[in-house]
Length: 279
Image 1 (tube, rainbow, N blue to C red):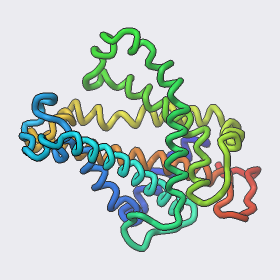
Image 2: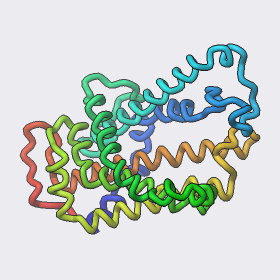
Image 3: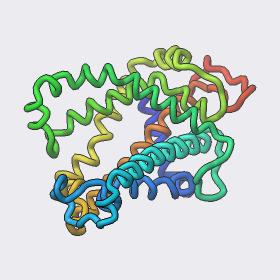
Image 4: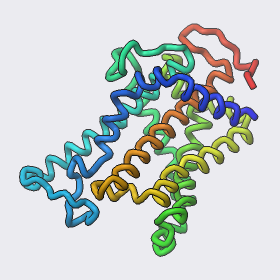
């Protein structure tokens, strides 16, 4: 099927092009891991998070507000880094552009536009988020009861649905931005609705797959939040970070493959036709 074929091609592209993946992600993945690790950045204290056993340095305690602000800025920078990785992966998959070295901050790429378009897609999913999580907001005891291991799985599936629905059906603008081609949400929707049920199935499959690594890690290795409590806590944390990054590449790659299937332009002036679809 149209959507599932795009997912299969994405898996193949990631595991067949490990060198390109390293050059595109080699800087921003470690940065993402560092920023995501509260134990290293002392973003929480022993009093507010008992699982953090390392004492907060005095200088951090004295200037906690500044360190908190620094952590927030670094978090935003990591999101910008994900946008850089996304643009790099789109350009590699669709035009074969492999960075000559590890990608850090390329000049001339539309990173700012890409980043804010992703933010807009997230905002478009907020009404759906409240709709799907209505029971959690009205009955907090339900949310607390489903907050551990496999019991948290379906709540995470709903969260991924909130992001994936606008991302898949409106997100063809993202590879277009990466390639410097003008596009709109309405044009993306006009194309993707031609394969509505196939792409809806793709959304459901991705939403079912994406939470599995974290749930399995939590069940069979240990809670990701127990960083610093021996090798098990660190192993759970790093496996979670790796799975998160693979999920990011999968979604970027799926959008690239759908874009390619519609034979959309790969550069300004490209006259490809969307009437002849790859299946």
